[in-house]
Structure formats: C-alpha cells, structure tokens
Length: 204
Image (cartoon, rainbow, N blue to C red; front, top):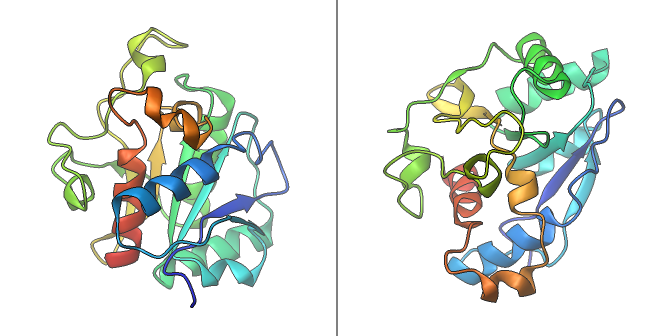
C-alpha cells in the first residue's frame, strides 16, 4: 500500500541542509502515533532542483548557514508551490536577522513571493491539535537562547488562500531533534505542532 505521507527533506546546494537529521524520524513517529494517516517508515531526501519534489505535498528545509538558491532551484520551488506543494522552512539558528534568516527569506521572496506574518487565527493552528495562541514556543526561546525573544507569529506565503511556504524563526529543528523513544520523558509532546503542519499540507 502506498503511504499517504512520506517525510521529505530538501537538499539545496548552499548551506547545511542536513543540520537536523533526527527531525524526520521524530515527526514520522508523531504522525503515526496521533493520526490515522499511513506514513512511510523512513523519510526521503530530495534535491530542490529535482522534479521529484513534486511527488511530496510537504517539504522541510532547514539550516544554519547562508542560503543561495540556483536558478534551477528557484524555478523548481516556484513551480512546486504553484502546483499545491507546501515548503516548511525552519531557521535552525534561532536568532533574529542571522545569516540563514536574511538569505532564506530573501530567496523565498525571489522564488515565490515575499513572506508576511501569519495570523495566529489561521486554520493551520486547528488543523489537528488546537493551538489557540498560535505557534507554540520552543524551550530555546523560553530559556533565552540566542536573541532572548519569543517569536509570536510565523511567516508565510499564501497561494490561493493556502499556505505554500511556512517560515519559522522558532528553531523547531532543535526542539524536535531527538530520538522518538525519548517522547516518554516529556510531560507535553512538543512535536504535536509538527503534526498540524503535516495534516494541513495533506488536506488543504
């Protein structure tokens, strides 16, 4: 049986695209744990320049270093979003106006459209679990990591009233970068918002 969802990590030519290797397995576990979605047991890595990207309704991109897309990567991302794909970008630095943030937001603007603040009332926050206050804070924010700032909103590009690019400065890549077996030590599973992102991408 073909799974409903396969976790897709985007490989891009610049930067360190593979900086959060534990995130895919953790979110695969959460989707399988909480939903009835059939999920592939392992994720895939797909170059941003490859048309294989169009097979996956959700793609995850992260890193710490400057991001510069090639012309082909830019064109592929533009077409991916126009065809109904959703790119989730998370700044793995958790700092404000750092090199990843500056360059990634610029490249998204060049490839798709400028990012805008996403209201905390967006359907994303109720697509599976309810997050009435918008994006959940990460422990790095609450502990004063980096910029000592809790980012109240995410940013997004919307295409036909649907999120085509979701951008986070909250460093979920660090928050979710642990082995799934360790969920039993958490009083609150901090990956639940990741489930919302997956369900939104599959159903909107």
